[in-house]
Amino acid sequence: MPGSRTGRPPAQRTVRLPPAPRGPRDNPLRVLHRRARKAWDRPLTAYYLILGGSLLITVLGLVMVYSASQITALQMALPGSFFFRKQFLAASIGAGLLLLASRMPVKLHRALAYPILAGAVFLMALVQVPGIGVAVNGNQNWLSLGGSFQIQPSEFGKLALVLWGADLIARKHDKKLLAQWKHMLVPLVPVAFLLLGLIMLGGDMGTAIILTAILFGLLWLAGAPTRLFVGVLSIAATIGVILIKTSPNRMARLSCIGATEPQSGPVDCWQAVHGIYALASGGIFGSGLGASVEKWGQLPEAHTDFIFAVTGEELGLAGTLSVLALFAALGYAGIRVAGRTEDPFVRYAAGGVTTWIVAQAVINIGAVLGLLPIAGVPLPLFSYGGSALLPTMFAVGLLIAFARDEPAARAALAMRQPRFGRKRAGGPAPDRGPRRWNTMRRRASAARTSGER
Image 1 (cartoon, rainbow, N blue to C red):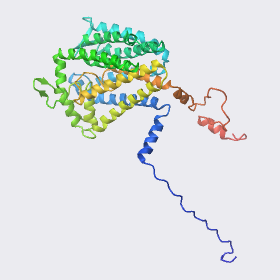
Image 2: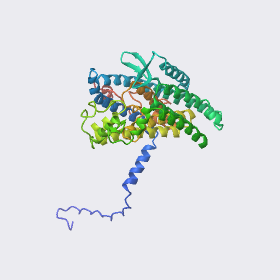
Image 3: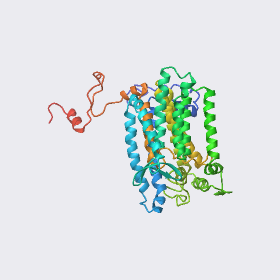
């Protein structure tokens, strides 16, 4: 053919079309925001945030307890891993309680409200009996279990108030009685004041503040009128001022807010100032795990109330921000669970647990940063102390159970692929081709022809 030396027809050239006009590029921040919002709207997001966040906080807390408590244990002529082993035992028991609470139905949680409240009140009253209660750091709020094991019943009082208060308000909500102020306050406020009185008899102002925060959280969620809310808040604030004014120890803690010298006049601010020193010496990425200087006797309660300061010294700003992010995710997920449910008990209980954990974290971290007075409360799921860890992990199990109980979350969990060859419930599955087996032997057998051996 003409135009071809080989006699073959010439190849046809492809006609290139002009490129289509590109639209304006979307803002990367808007794309990121859209993706984050889409991920947040997924049914199981709250479930994964609560489960993953709580477990990460607990595991990181175990690591920091081991690091921060070694010197204290050696100074007490104990093995270096003494406090870590006790915390690990408490975390193991707490993991069982978390799993149990996450699998219990809501009706059973409501049925346990009154027994837990009665048990907490009995144990808190037993603490005040001479010869039975044990005083630690000037506060008589412990019971000895034999050996080195002690229990603080006031920590279980937080869980009791959340469960019992949520069940009480939910019953009154169903009967449409919350519009009357007497049904809003009675018997919730008197029982809460009973718990507060038993706690204050032992001198534990920090736990009383957390219990008060839970009470106001429940009243807020129940829709208390502003006048009623402000009235109860004013009474509580007045009682708090009187208790602080009449105690030189509490006045000294209040005067140490923002202190920069260990001895600020006649007030000893050693613990508050050395907590700031620990945070300041950590830098961006810290001095390294186990390399804290302040835990060598300079910082009191390094593995309990001030473990956040040791975390800042060893892991730096990156470590402290990670802990804050985990608590923020846990609190945000709890708010989502409380806001999306139609069950009044789930709403009040989830809101109460979220208020408890977030308020306690804010008070502890605020004291370490020098922004709030030292209240003597541990960092939830993080500080050393089995009495605080066990009820907190049970409360996290409550949140997980509530997150799983959402209709959309139940549907998403039911649509998961079955494992180990189990058939999905609800009738025969549609025909999707040859079945895929899970074991290597069955896969090999299925690949052979009928005449192979």
